[in-house]
Image 1 (cartoon, rainbow, N blue to C red):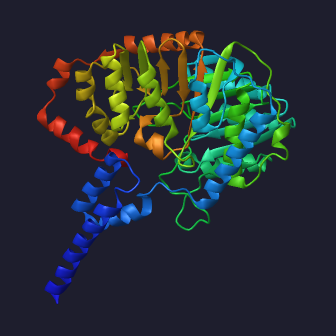
Image 2 (tube, rainbow, N blue to C red):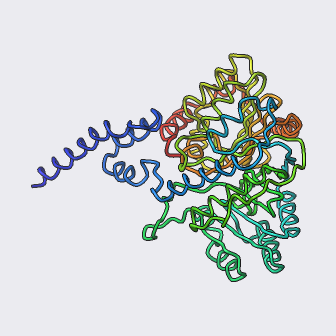
Image 3 (tube, one colour):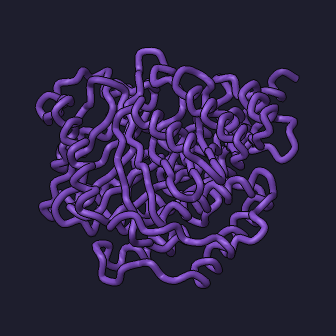
Length: 470
């Protein structure tokens, strides 16, 4: 009997391997298929159970239906209201692609201020909330009632006390260890509607998967000013030894309504409530000269639209690409676009954190450095803090800032948001920030990188095999 049960188990393992060999590669990238098949061939039953839980990036039908409803509302609203895009502006035909990928058209007349100082950006947000007269909407992956998030919470409570309409969304998993339940209760006790985004749990009705997260950072005040970028509202040292350094964009002008729409769509996803008359929303007044556009991304969309956009941008770049990201785990089209850009004579720089707060991610990330260096990409390892900022500049006329990491998880699993600004003045401001990164970084060389020990190379290449799970 022992042998027959043993034989049955072995046969079941091979049945899993053979069936999954056919099933897994369907409608997924070769990299993702490779990762899963390797795990399945090594550990058939554990991998099968894990695949059954998270193997397919699938939003529930009701969430996809709400995404379609919101997209249609956005398209209808844009047909009703006057076009703000400046024909022949700095973006050329790029805004049309971004609109096809994420619904929002480019809007002119914005003012964009980049805020690289962690405490100053939080103080600025609290100050704007204290000036609110109509509403405050906050959507954050992490919002903690601590010495940094606390001043924002207090400003929110003051706003509510003087009659301002406030709403708060906080990612259910990202903020869980920061006293999320107590904070939500405190806000609700003050009369502020506050909800978890993508609530997860084995026994919760309509629960989301633990690995599908709302990673966005958006604040909108009075549909007059908005904030977006990489910064969570939490003490920068919440991971001991890795104090975060960020970049936030403070936005005024017509494009604020797009960040408002991103908040309202996520509010609709979690509560089922939409504004009574979305068509009545008016464009904010012009405040500056920047043409700008918002691109939301996530599993609710039909494609990995942030990745698709970046690959296109790298192929169209003519002079310079600078990528700043804490996590760099690209797919093959992303890498090929960077290599091709260098061959065309484009200067390509990558700025990453050194060290990285997740050791497996750090190993996988560094496995790409050799081929990037051989291709001619300049790699800067930023030393002073954990550089959590996420932004890209292309040539002299396009800056992108938001919550999107340059990794497969951000492209495929997380709800993210990016602000595109077609303005040389904003690119110059971003370049000033980038120059401080270069000055405070170690620039890798091929010779130095080639001297790393063999066991380090093996560990890096092994971690890379799990890129689609990171």
